[in-house]
Length: 196
Image 1: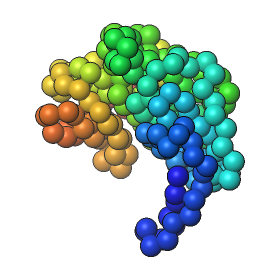
Image 2 (image 1 turned 45 degrees about the vertical axis):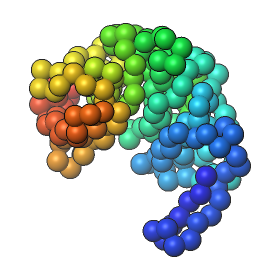
Image 3 (image 1 turned 90 degrees about the vertical axis):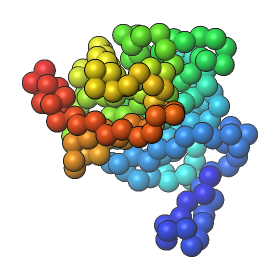
Image 4 (image 1 turned 60 degrees about the vertical axis):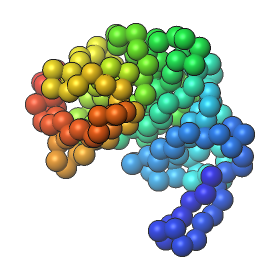
């Protein structure tokens, strides 16, 4: 893994060869730029010192393909992992959270329909508000993943491979496979989550 602090003019190596060079996802903590989480094929790697040292912390996670890793906007020790069982015919929603930087993991996808989860996003404004991009659309949780509600009344049932919360504008950006990119207003969802 390489890092640039001058818009790509110069690069510095910040990791050994993690996961045989098969890293798929990387997330930098919005609370501490030295905290990074990287997702390989089936393993998750953590650093809290800007890449000087890395630890593989996948104990407690199933042996599934990693589809997304996201660091928390509200907890410097928090991160989320979405995993896919599609390669072995298992459509279970594999979604996990850690509150101790990967030492332990808790499943938060059990209330989602049995379909592959490709992306996870945490709202930057409202703690506990999560979004999941799945094989058949977008879901929202107002309670840190305890329950989930479909947003497909205003969104087509399509595979969603990436999600980003645009905090300033109160919108969720969802990238689909085959149907373009969608912008969903989330201010009403934020209000509902705050009133919980």
